[in-house]
Length: 244
Image: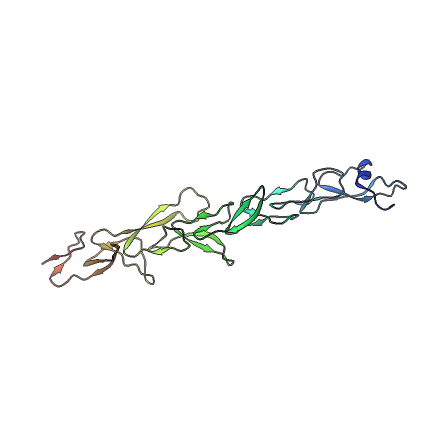
């Protein structure tokens, strides 16, 4: 064929098509057509590590390639690509990245975990509540509000009824989005109570009960009632009241 030439013929010619490019067709030097007609850069999603080749190679799954690439680039932490020959990686929002050699998949974070994303792995959200994006992906961990706590692997914080919330620093994890985590709901000491309710005002701390403390079956001080007739409370850190 006088209009095309093989890769070998082009390579044997005086061509100089560097890595990241490929040879396309042949020149007009009849009758042998030994010189290449064009040296074209590899399109995005493909690469070529060798000079004077007549085709580019698809970037494998878990990687990407920019235009005129000599090689593919692996997806960075928190990114993945499940197709071949792609110009960029996909962000793994609210999920964990699975790698063989490259990052090839993104699995949603399970209950109580999130990914911003700042890395490949989902992170436990302890002492906070999970925030989801419109697609239902778990993308952030927000500090529990006053009177709420989270001591389990779950998405939402719980109401601390009749107790005080203990918060601890989240630690040196840069991907945590809060500075402290509400991790426990501790029983109020004698003579104190906390009237947190789902629909009312909430607070972390217990307060003195000028009256009679009522505790539930778990010992949580959920009510502060008036003293019975003939009794009083001298605020001596006691649940039981003295008789006049």
